[in-house]
Image: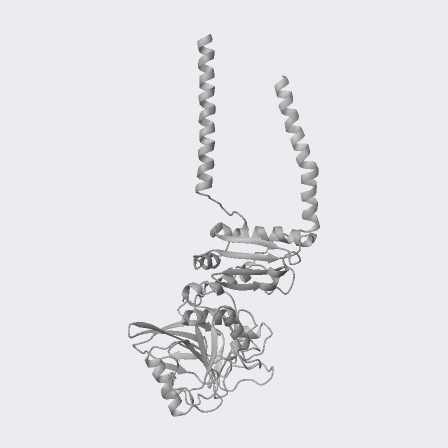
Amino acid sequence: MKLTRKNLMLKNFAYAALLLAAAIALGWLAARYPLQRDLTQGASNSLEPVSVQALQQLPGPVQIRVFSPEQDAKQADMRKLIRQFVGLYQRYKSDITLDFMDPAQHPEEARKAEIQANGEMVVEYDGRREHLSMLNEQVLTSALLSLAHRQQQLVMYVDGHGERKLEGIANFDLGDFGKRLGKLGFRMSSLNLAVAQDVPDNASLLVITQPQVDWLPGEVDKLMRYVDHGGNILWLLDAEPMHGLEPLAEKLGLSLVPGIVIDPDAQQLRVPPTWTLGANYPPHAITRDFGYPTVFPFARALDHEENQPWHYSTLVDAAPRGWVSENPPKGNTAPKFNKNRDEPGPVVIALALEREVDHREQRIVAVGSGAFLSNQYSGNLRNLDLGVNMVNWLGKQDNLIFIPPRAAKDDTVTLSWTQLGIISVGLIIVLPVAFALVGGALWWHRRR
C-alpha cells in the first residue's frame, strides 16, 4: 500500500513537472515567435498590404509624438485609441515608439516641433518629420510613404505656352496635385524651354500639359532630345489643337482621336455629359488593386500604332456604352449617338509606355484629360490618388505606389418589427423554457 501511494505521488509530481515545463516552453515560444490571427470581418484589426510595404521601406526607427494635455478627459480617451491604433503598426515594426507630451509641461519641445494645436502628432524618421492633425490608416501610411522618399525627386513642368502650373492656384492649374506631390517628398520646378538649354539631367520626370500657343521649333528639338535620351514624361492632353507637339505624338506612336468622349454611364450619376467615368483599370503597376472610380472631364480618346521600341499598356478603359463625338453637347443637353459621325466606345483614356534606352528603362504616361488633375476637378473621387501613382511609377518608385485603404464593410443588420418580435420571444421565452424542460427531464431520469 505504501509503495502504491509512493508511486502515485511520484506520478503526480512528474505530471505537474511536465505540465509546468510545457507551460514555460509555450510561454517562451509565444514570446519568441508571436502569432496573431485577425478573424474580424474585413480584417479590421490588421493593416492593409500597402501599409505593411510602407513600413518595410523604413529600415530605421520611427518616432511618433502626440502633443496633448494630460488632464483632459477626452484627450485621455483619445490617447488610449491612439495607442491601440499605433499598436497595429508596431506589430509589423517593433522599433516604432509612441510618446505623449503635454504642451503646457514641455513648451520648448512643442515650440521646436512647431505644434499649432492640441492633439497634433509628429512622425519623425531619419531627421525628417510629418505633422498630422488626424489619425487613420490612410493618413499615417501616406506620412510614412512621404518619409520613405529618401531623396527629393525633381518634377519639372513645362511653362511658357499658357500651360497648367503645378504650383498654380487657378481652377485651370494643377496646384492641389502639386501640393500632394510636395507632401510625398517631390520638388516642383517650372521649365521654360525657350530659355533653358535643355531639360536638366537631374529632372526625375517632365510634366507636359496643354499649350495655348504654338511651341517654337527649337523648343520641340530640346524636348525630342530629352525623349531620345530616355527622359520620363507625364503628358496630359486635352481635346484641343496640338500647337506644335505633333512630333512628340509621332515619336511615341500615339494616334489622337479627334473629339470628346461621351459616357452615358457617367450621365446616370447626374454629372455633365462631357465627363467620362474611369472604373476599368487593366493590370499594371500604377493601377494594381486600384478599384476606385475616377472622372475625366472633356476627355479625348488615345490610340497607338504598333511601334516596335515601345511597350504599350492601357491604364484606363472607359465609356463601354459611349462614343467619341466631334460635336460635343452644349450645357446639360443629353447627347445622342450619330452613327455616321461618331466613333463608338469603349475607348482608352490613359496609356503607359516603356522601352530600353542606353540600358535604362524609360517610362511615359499619356492621359487624354488635363482637367482630371486640375484644381477644379482633382478632388472628385480618386483622381489625385491615381495621379500620384502615375508620378511614383514614372519616378521608378514602384514600391511607394499608394493604394487607397479598403472601404469599411456595411455590417448593419436591419430587421422588421415582426423579425424583432420573433427574436425577442425566442430569446426571452422559448429558450429559457426549453432549457428548463431539458433540465427537468435529466433530473427526473437520474432520480429514477
